[in-house]
Figure 1 (cartoon, one colour):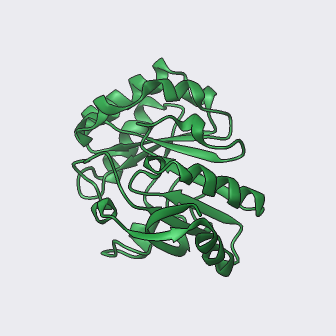
Figure 2 (cartoon, rainbow, N blue to C red; figure 1 turned 45 degrees about the vertical axis):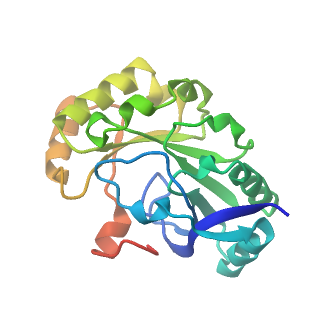
Length: 215
């Protein structure tokens, strides 16, 4: 029977992506291959608890929510994350998968909405991206740049333009790192340059300030 290592399961308000504000169930899988300087889910690097796919599905059913996100850590480190996504799609859920873009996203089944978190220079992980993933993005997918500085912002603009991301996928999201970049400063840059991107604040951090798990 197929299993996954799970850090936590919870339902909350989706805080990111174009689905922000929607009630959503979260499946946070254990393990990560990145060590971002501003990581806010370092606890997910641990081993987690072993759960069968059926056990996870049964927990998801209890939430009575149409929207589910598989996240991490880095969920694609566990190949059966794709199997879980297929199972949830068959159950009729809208399935989001957030990935750091270092592993092939084409392992995910058709129908999944892939949200790629493109790591910027200040994260320390930008050189570990698998850039061929950008060619796999579809019209329903989204990309997110989490920005810690002006350097990150200018780099994100260049990547967005070079890969024509605003035409390739559903949304390009710019989000400031909490405590590193003031939202008003990022807003000012966006208003000046007017890139085809959407500014986004991590909604869950404003609803539940100080909470790092289960939100």
